Image (tube, rainbow, N blue to C red; front, side):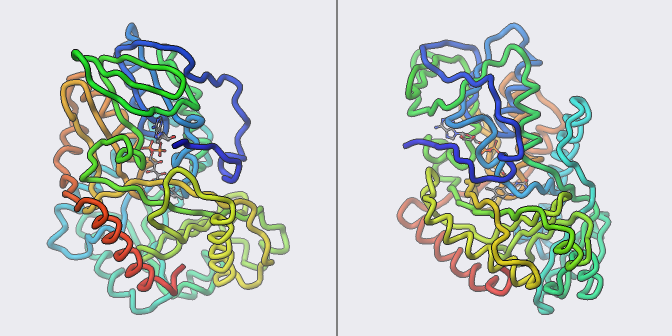
Length: 434
Ligand SMILES: Cc1cc2nc3c(=O)[nH]c(=O)nc-3n(C[C@H](O)[C@H](O)[C@H](O)COP(=O)(O)OP(=O)(O)OC[C@H]3O[C@@H](n4cnc5c(N)ncnc54)[C@H](O)[C@@H]3O)c2cc1C
């Protein structure tokens, strides 16, 4: 099995190519090994580098660092989420714990970009949970109630206002939360790579095949070398399960997204020249759709159980057609062939949408499973799991550990059957919203 970089993601194509790439080609030993160089692994490495300036820290990724889901997402740094089942007031306490974690996630990303003067198209423009169905008003009013109780600034908007703000007639109702941030995920993760501390050694294109504990050390076998380490942090998110980590608690889901070229002046005028915006669906399997500051439209309207290692070009093309239809539904006046790239990315889910943050034993640690909130929460969890692995404690760790823990999943083949059935049900519920 192999993880392959491709050139099909606009966020990655926007970046300059890097020239400092090292592959693992010999046997090494270290105090600290981190597997996976997305937001989680990069943040863990950054923190360990500062906490242990004299120790050897190795960070390894199967592909180019940051070019997994961390560059392939929709770029919403979320303050709140709707699709978690927290729609009744009895769940208020659990929802608050989740929102406290999102808040810490926003703070940690903000601190990073301020400290390193990162330009990642940061825009505190809020976000919309929108629906084309008036029936969804009830869900949004319920949600509004929860947000009011927790003090989140928000508003309900209806068709006419939405047309002005988003440039489309498609949506009938939306709940806007002021605290959401939109950013360029590729630029953010690239900055995390560029600012790694000097005592962090990054090896890329180096796939971890297997790992084993022996005499208090962990031996890791890669395609072209071995690493022996005292402590290890697994930050492979959608690939935790395939490495045997918390197998009964997480499973990978493949998401596919497309991005258009920039709209020209005439096209942009035809949709009312809106400011940058981001819409999340009210029904879980509906489309995430975003207008970027450089007038590109991003759409993500598929989520499925699929081989996480590779999606072929022909399979991507099929999903691209769905995304073209999704754009056309919202912007019928735009030309048909404006999609420039289509890509897939892997996220990790748990049964109850709770994240994994855990000491597996004295030397083995794991953080992951953020669903659609990995930009902030991944950055936070990476930093905090590094602190936990260094036997220290923080208020952030206490907040993280007070969340609901992930619940147990049935074994295969029941798991895949169950997930597929659930996705089919959600897809049917959201068929007008894709
Ligand atoms: C289409 C899409 C849209 C999304 N939208 C949003 C959004 O708007 N907002 C948000 O917050 N989140 C969003 N997400 C989720 C977010 O991208 C993830 O939660 C986040 O990237 C997780 O970061 P991570 O570092 O834990 O994992 P990843 O970024 O997945 O990094 C894990 C790394 O581990 C490496 N790896 C895996 N197996 C091995 C191995 N055997 N050996 C070595 N390395 C290995 C991979 O190559 C990868 O680089 C989206 C995801 C997708 C795919």
